[in-house]
Image 1 (cartoon, rainbow, N blue to C red):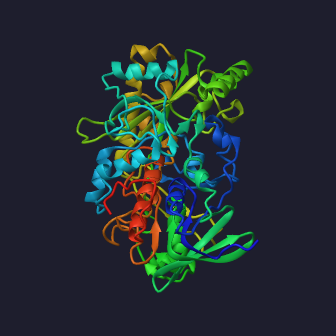
Image 2 (cartoon, rainbow, N blue to C red; image 1 turned 120 degrees about the vertical axis):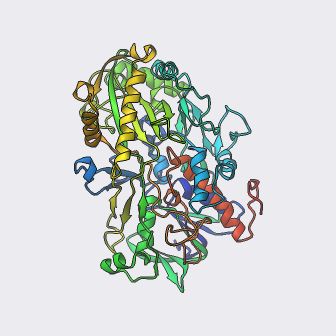
Image 3 (cartoon, one colour; image 1 turned 60 degrees about the vertical axis):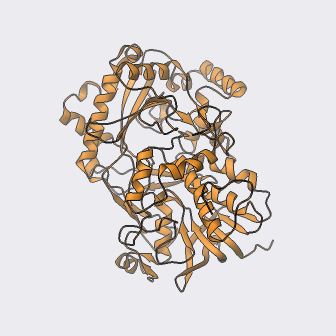
Length: 552
């Protein structure tokens, strides 16, 4: 069958932002839109049932198994940076935690050269993306493509944790997504009736019947085609053949914070010396491509639980598996409906902090490896739970760059975890906060003992050594194509256009100047929504069916 070779818009990457873009840019029926995804379909049951996603996290058929450079401050350890390689991208394999982030972080972006991305400007898009039955309609959306579920009253362990936080003096927040971010709360999930609500399910599936939207899976984009500093299409590998596809209007990279900077470099856009070393002809020098990479460093404490109510217990008991399976099948609830955490505490590491810089997160399982969900994978044989600790405003900055002119070769990644020692001390404050919360009656009665690090780490130096031994990624990667006003400090402008190249944009979490305090999926989908409005306005094309939160 002959496939068209020219479209109005070409979107590279069917992830959190890419699926939203594809839906909105194609909904008026006027523009021909091509969405290209390197991975395959999202039809695995392991994607749809949240807890079962662990079966895919090391499967190269669904993920990019990127590995970082050895981390000097983590005793030379590398990190596995799993990213989604499937329709929906990382929204199809993530932990489903639904967090908009800290309003203060969005407001800070204007000071960093990205006006128009403050909390007030983003709030209408957060409302647009979600379908949440609770909360105020002033701040929450009711009928958006992404289902959102509250885990309030999820189980006795989450109840005990939240109540212990109250006993420890933390405010218990009813809805941390309404702008009141700081405090303890039950988490919200991007699920609908217990099933994962990914960007592919919410945005792409309803749009697949449109004649003007074409989706290519299993297709690897090699580079953008640039003529006279204008993007005119892409070169891709499809069905074992190299193909060129033209874009009448724009090329949009939505390939994520690891792949988008690599694609820019393979297209000849980036640091002149690096491209020369790789044998890539320089099209446009842009020194910040791939720089400014950020992620939340994450360490954790684990505990033996006094009640057999954790994922550890379910997966080691045939009867419990049946019970949880029936609960999920008939009600869409229970442990199968989650895949990571159930409650959190957003706090300040010291009273001097102007906004929260630390997050504690309760997870109802424990093991040697955060990927573990079975005894043979390192899941603890006893009932157990984890409290993860992440530094929300890390000062350390790293980079990601192409390692070869060959598009099949993975890029080099160096996040430089804990390169700034302040990040380790924030995690240290988090460990002490977890131990303090665990000492209060509501949670103390649920604990037999602390298993990691336990008695092996008591002094600050011992705890800092434990942090260096155990800190891992949180998969909240941003910043490698940061937006801003000039080419000295950024890669794209506030309208997401690549500096110096016409008709080429980047629309994914790589453009965030800093991490929006917590999980990146909801902010990235909202970014896709806002980008669609920006692009439509640029081409004088108003989108019907959804009122624009921005003035034309």
